[in-house]
Image (cartoon, rainbow, N blue to C red):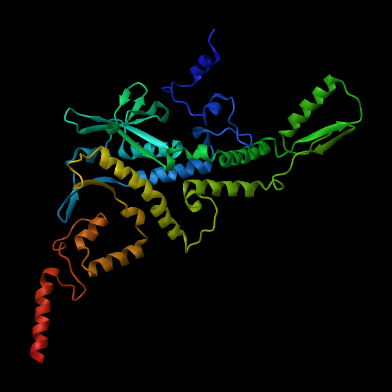
Length: 400
């Protein structure tokens, strides 16, 4: 006869001897409930709309930013399109995923579990040729001597240079850390579902002064349960009284509780409520600033984490720092048409950008003669500015 652990093993996948004391009880159904009576796991938390929206918003935003490999030669920076990591990061990390799908899944894992893993496959010369996502529960970090290695289910031991790893603060799941908050949000959600599922009828007691047999009680109870799931007026049996023992959604501050918990979840993931359709204090005057803060304080830290990991694992040490990775954050900070037009005007007048460089940022083709840099004085070329200055000086000297 199979033991209880063996029976449970039929339902739970093998985990390389990796068990987390914070979650194993909840996963086996033994313990782990929150004070609100709800068991919260990483997968289960996705049923809370605000959790799913926050994870999706962060993961989809940062993965939609092109991750480019650059080559710096003196003062000139160009795309390192011939580098083996270029196509892996920007187009095709493996044969079955696009770059956006791959990075989105990796970031989602880090947001849910605290860490996201991807195994690096290399050719005989050590050049990276593929990146493959790994399930969080299939990977167990171990310390062997002074070296950190990874035990991977179905693969074996993987050395650190062949494991792409992105993690959040403390490498801990925010869902586990804040499971009481999420439990309250799920409990409020379930309360609403049960309330409307019962036809908007609140829990109560049917009482009578008349003695009843068990068969009579069962018939009356079954009849009342059926009546509760239907709208309309309810008819009480003769001599019965109905006494409500539950509170109404208004009395429970149902809407206020759900809104507050949604804001709490936004706070956990550092996402402005406006970006996940949670009513807040947003106005037309401050919504753009909230988006900039989201880009600066939420997306940029995640982008930097990945950039540094890519530089360490996918770019050889002898190529650094001339070769490096960088997300293209231009679109994230791009304002409306009026703001962009004003920006380009100032950059062109100051000689920072050429006409063709400004057109390239808008995905427009270059124009003839658009590669020169001009300054505001008559919009002359920088290469001619010295001669123009000398001419003005000579004219001033001659007039004296």
